[in-house]
Image (cartoon, rainbow, N blue to C red; front, side):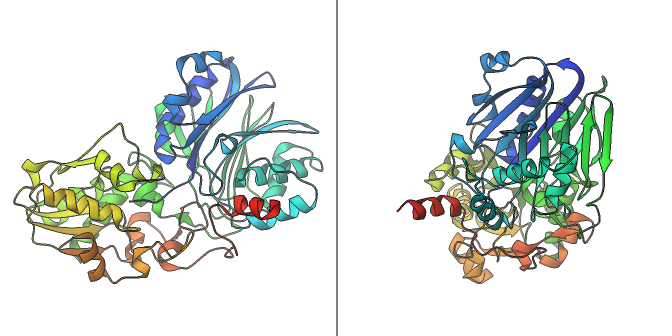
Length: 471
């Protein structure tokens, strides 16, 4: 598995000053699976912003001395990042802070704008100077531009949403208000909850709301803006219903934590249903079903329940190594560090191996090899997603077909390349089994895009433009 997803966002607002930084820290820890490249927290203390951002994991960046340096505040925003646009460096860490004529603003963003290059070019021609290469700065520029003409920050955000296209779940903080917004398609998840003392929490996933001791209230609807103040919360719905709902189905397959509930659907249950479907569509004569930790485990449980083949723990994950997609180089060594096979479970056995996807095939081949080395007699691989056939423009780091193994090889060929005795994918038409409705995006599998396709999809497109300009 080697898909990249962009990030997780978090926000907190309370009636009285509180340890907002620590609440944000706990929330980001629960969202660490969504991005392990960098993280940041900004606290609002009576209109003054205190911030800390850096490259690294949440626990590495926010040491006890760093957390102790934050003031108590009534609001905070947090972000944990894996960038799908923009280089991996401190400059691109979020949340970002913008100073403008009417005050200050901090913003954290999850997703990719499909019209980012066009918007950035227009802003540059109008005199804007960009300091980062992420879509988030583009959003911030548009919001601040609209703020000069709007009566409030929420009005400015609503006007900005008329211009933005693609995926964006946002948390935005002004000196007085905390806002969140989800794009009209609802590509990326966003929800909110409330603590017993009236403190409101906004997060990418419900697991983060529970992690800080808050009660889940509901998902933010596609197109909705929520405005939080000390007096409560107000919903703005002028963008709701302006586009068909298209939640990324890969949230259920891989991105989200299994204990999260997204748009009313349990991620764990969705993955179990995918496993059951695989057992019906691609049965195998085997002795044990095992899953690739972590996102393959629930589907493996579903396959076992449907097929009657015993479920076993055949692969152990080193919990001190992050998801392999985080490593930019030497991927095979990362897989070897991350996973090991339990010989007592797999030796001499016919194995059904469940994973969430195959992208390039290198990771899958290495995992099959680990099982062979541990004595597996047969390895029948089943994948709880369809084959990746198309680029994604909404936050999944697939910018071209060139590295997608399914674009260049048949299923039997892929099975031979990864060393499996057989291979079966979840059919694209069965994705509704996961999402529970038709309101999801499957463009990376089907090629059916809900927005216009951008001309330049390279991950480093803005860095390239900078180098081309300076030459």
